[in-house]
Image (cartoon, rainbow, N blue to C red; front, side, top):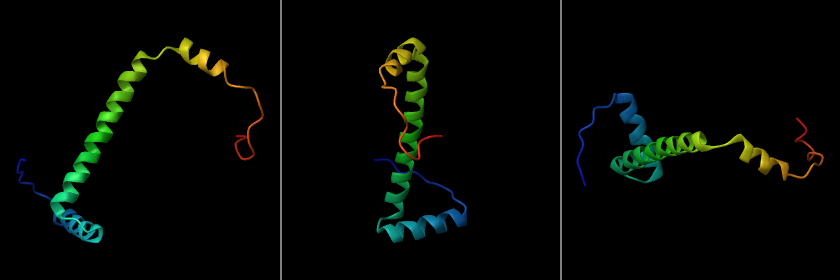
Length: 78
């Protein structure tokens, strides 16, 4: 495990401290979880962008052609 010295504005530190206390976790754990969530979001976005580059419209059309033609459910008309 690595140590990291981090400078934060007082207002952000105060919010982190309050939320961590409310969640019943340490500030260290809260920040570690927040960073992990951000990393996951960025990696997911990168994956989807790269996957979309490989997509072919013809394949999508084949899939959509299999969808039955029926009236939308109430509330889904728009």
